[in-house]
Length: 488
Ligand SMILES: Cc1ncc(COP(=O)(O)O)c(C=O)c1O
Image (cartoon, rainbow, N blue to C red; front, side, top):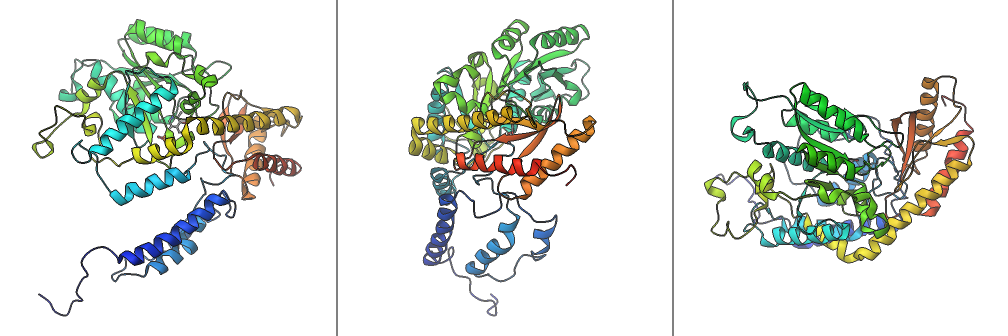
């Protein structure tokens, strides 16, 4: 033993030090929740590389003071944070790390369990299955659906397509896809408005981008089911084997809803797996008057939606439901000796249903959110968000300088400045510049998309802190910025 080395204390940091730092942090979080993040610019203003440039190139050799770490968080890290928990965050999809969700997340980190097996934390597995049952019922989905949590909808959709591939009986689990002359080209279909995660799933699963076919949309950005039927028939005639259809409830650009009942009929007739991606809009079905958006989903083989989008749960938490848990298990279960347990045949081991072994205790934050708000509390917020979106859409409709670019079924409004240049490129450029000027105020953050009429700006209302005042302020900012000449 080298006596010149300082003796290491046994255990973690001093508990009283922990308590002091935790209180400081909780105080900061509390103030952030109190003012809806408004004390910070919503969109970070740092330049690329600025944060990294202020950080040392090496980890410290010696322990550092927690106070110093906190100070650096404030001075170096915070300026580089884009505040998704800000009342003015209206980009992509508005989300919320709510107070109850933060509490659940805190406990989850403190317990630090790995719920890979039932035995490695019975509560992690059982709470997850029960809470997912609550959510399934709250959405009006069939009671027989089996649900579990993943990190993201991207992974949920990838697992679903892997299950569809397993269901096709091509023995890909054992034999793989390479070097086989008995394997036809496989095809997955989704609308051209579907999220890029579907294409990525095809890349990851070896179907390739050529194994993914997009179907055109109608005038309301919904999948055209007749075009889907034609694509399937054409593929069959060409020797391609259709595998699955991904329908979207709440597309990323406009939140349009694919005609799932018709698509489900096609899948039934053609013997195809139907996966529904309701990552954002699925939450709306908690309100009975919006249940229509899940019409036909009772026929889906798998269904994904994200509590971390509009259900006030800190990222990450995505729910996947299926009528065929045994197919997921067939696709993914692989139990080496060191993961066997004496109770395996009496319990659900959630590691069996996907790729990852380690599993966070995600159900805890969801449980906290559902109990602290109650379904009725959640409904009130969802309705408030949809009303704010409708009001904003009405304001756009009344302003002759603006045009609405898509219907507003939920809480996202797509719009653009009209007559903003002689050519389509000029109009796109003007609208993108308009968005940059709006975002530079630091009060709101909008994102954009490309629709049939060109670039559109999106106002996505979904943060718990967003109020009528924030939307009015957005309108005032747009008014001011519309006065500026193009290119400024
Ligand atoms: C319709 C849809 N599906 C999937 C995703 C991907 O979600 P995640 O980040 O959970 O993978 C998104 C993200 O916005 C989405 O809008």
